[in-house]
Length: 331
Ligand SMILES: C[S@@+](CC[C@H](N)C(=O)[O-])C[C@H]1O[C@@H](n2cnc3c(N)ncnc32)[C@H](O)[C@@H]1O
Image (tube, rainbow, N blue to C red; front, side, top):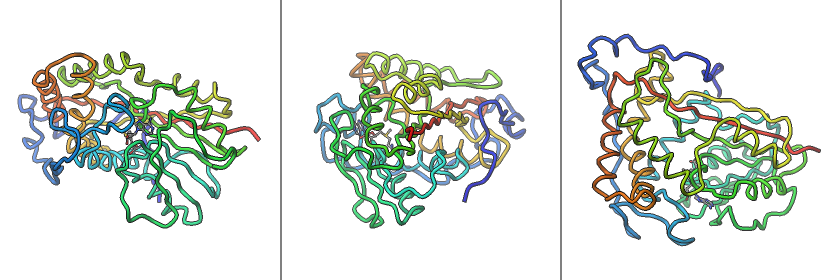
């Protein structure tokens, strides 16, 4: 299933020469590259609205700053595909043998859990989330539970071979408590893996778009304010080590924004990021900018819009680090 050689942070992503032909043009279309191969459907929302998006409020209004509407669910599924491609087709990096029980915290649409259940048909995969947005028709070995991962867990100690958490940095406040619960429910010899897209915007040729950089810095500022900061390799490593996990391995990959890369895999990943650009910039930005930074809805929308414009500009060759860390519970 997996292709070898996913590019790591030290590997340079070569820029497609077509992108460098006419620097006065910004649009990808000017290079003959079609970015409109698919579109994200707009949603008909039924619940609590804020700036035209539906948010989950069962556990309190500020439990989650991300919407849970259909637009967000499509974005999550698209991002899943991006991240699987980033790991060369793998769902995770921990060296699992034949896991029998797997837990996915903050499972979102459950797409990772469902794929995992397909790979390990003899395993039971449990996905938890505060929001019941998972589908009903799933493989028989997947189970979803509505649960706040920050509350006390009721799972039996030593009952999972593997616990997975992806892109929860902006959702969880008390990581030491969460990881101590992960430690408790993991079987001795089992693994816990944390995967997070960093809030860092990088470019190897210094071509970050200013509006995208502004958006990213504001998201960072708001996340710092709510005590859910962006992560680094060191932060993720110490989260696992402090909880007692050993043989911790960290690997960081580049997630390019826009189809500017020469190689097919990164071009496809980058193309998918701009398909999800509007949903992503507004999904992450709107609640944080209005609720935490006190902006008006119009101001916040303008910032998101400008960031999307930069994402669609072929002359900006940005990427964010995608950090994956796993560790083993000692026998
Ligand atoms: C960015 S999404 C990531 C979803 C999924 N892990 C993925 O990678 O596709 C964050 C998810 O965490 C959920 N979430 C937020 N706070 C949570 C909490 N305290 N306990 C459980 N899930 C939570 C949200 O409802 C949302 O589905």
